Length: 270
Image 1 (cartoon, rainbow, N blue to C red):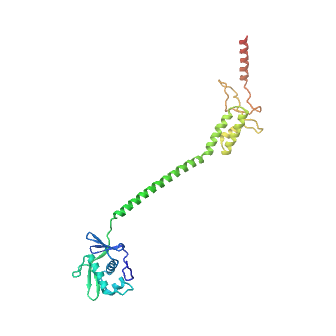
Image 2: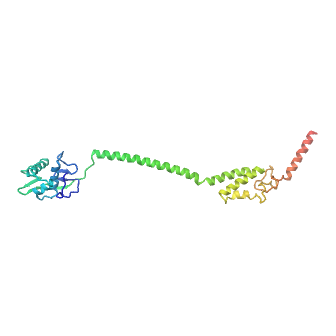
Image 3: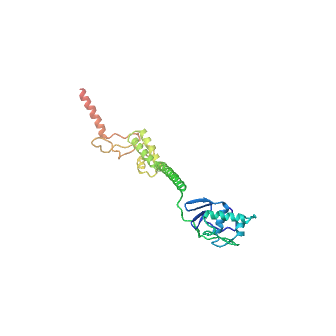
């Protein structure tokens, strides 16, 4: 489309002229159930006349706007006006769109306005549907990725956030197993494990209580026999003491039980 400083500043993509709709970008004229494509000069003439709001536009101004820098005869202008009238279905003798003003020029009789709001075309609807579908897919993929990352982070952080506590419990369980074996080697293993627990949790009360039996001279940590044996003769692990010989001394009733067993065997042999 030819443009010139003489053209009106129509910011709209299209406009209405009477019963017709003109599309500047496509160069089409739609109305009465038909659509026709106008020649660039014919569309330029329609735009020029529409921008003058019913005022007369001289022939010289029209030729300057449509053919800037060129010298053309009035026959070129007459043919362009005739083509525009034919497209609009106008009659030069009884015009309803373009009126000829003798020895002056032309003016547009029909009202000019903006295009009404239009529903999107089938192609536009199809493009919008495809875009919406692709957008939904990408959103779903993005949510799945975020969810996967969240689960991975939870698993990793969940394992890394509590390992000291879990490890200390495991160490305490192992240490207690060694602690109640009542042997020098097991006691040394228990002491090492309790010290590892304190390395993880310096204020662990159970580990500190277990190590409280570890003397300053390097004696072994041994549970002591109960002061008064119960009916079953089992040791009470809550009552502990150190033994410099690496084992707990036998209680008196244990020696008496051994002597009674020897006497019983002697009587049986006799």
